[in-house]
Image (tube, rainbow, N blue to C red; front, side):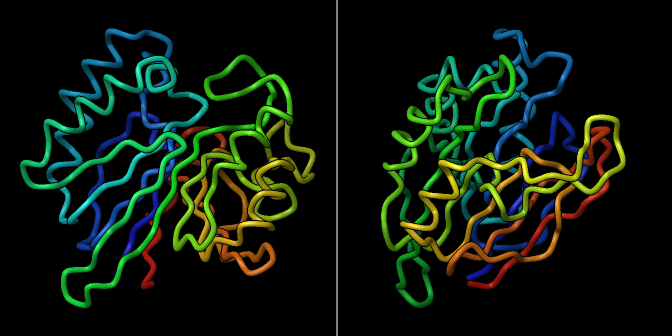
Amino acid sequence: MRICGISDMHGNLDFSIEPCDVLCICGDIFPLEIQNYSKPCEKWFAKEFLLWCDKQPVKEILLIGGNHDFWLSRHSDNAKNECLKFPKNVRITYLQDESYEYIDEDSGKVYTFYGTPWCHKFGDWAFMPETDDTLSYHFEKIPDNLDVLLAHDAPYGVSDVCLQDVWWNKKEHIGSKPLANAVAIKQPKILLHGHLHTTNREKELLEKTSVYNVSLVDEKYEMVYKPLYLEI
């Protein structure tokens, strides 16, 4: 089965996905200029984003929120209902601390996915609890024996050192320690994340988990990266 991973589109829909089975979108989908406003976000989600999704040559799309996705954090039920209006061509599923099973039509094999949007606290953003204890509570829900974990944040110590030369970058590990702890225990086969735009684009390992950054933009929000494709 072939999957694609992307994240941090920030409203940019001027690209297409190659044919694959499952497209995994790891959060921060909304345009920056409307991210704080519910009505424009709801309209953009239904009239632009989902229509873009439905045009992609994939069988299913799994979506989670990110720290810029305030509308998803406030209106998750609305997001799920909008997704249910499709499939027209593509089945779209919004996951918020939820599992999903994909059954490969050819082999009959079941692949398990799980989506979690939570990030460690560094400002007043969506999906950012005040304490690591709350983060750990959310991440404890991640099940064992996952094929693919969709997370927005990066795990601490792996795929979490930004490489672009910007004023705030101290070239230090800045990922989530509660997420790293959970991944070390649960050991999903693959972890896809975004949030930190310019960390290493190659596979890194956290215990037995292959970790990939799938952000499409750099630290200046310019689209410079390509979608990641994996055979699993």
